[in-house]
Length: 87
Image (cartoon, rainbow, N blue to C red; front, side, top):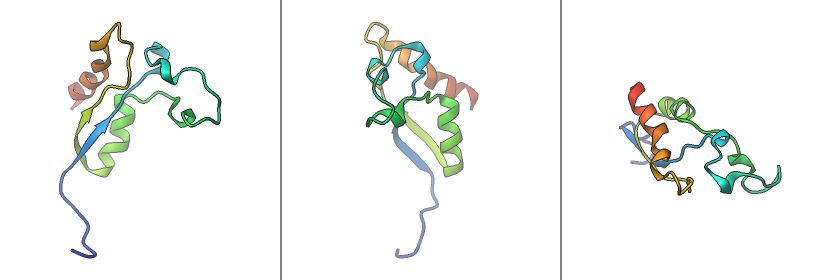
C-alpha cells in the first residue's frame, strides 16, 4: 500500500465541546496566557467542530466528556444534540 492514500469514510475517535462563557469547565479557567492549556482556552462548539471536520471527510464522531460541572452532568451533551439536529 505504499504511496496510496486512504479515501474511505473517517470516524473521529473523540472530540470535546465547550463554551467558556457558561463557566462549566473550571479546569480551563484562569491560568497564564503562555501555559500549556492556553491553546484550549477558547470556545469550541459544534459549528467549530463541523468547520474543521467536514472538509477532512469526517462522517461521524464520538463526543467525550470534558470534565463538565458535576452538578449538571447531562448538560454537557447539549452541544452534541445541536450538531446532530443540523445534519
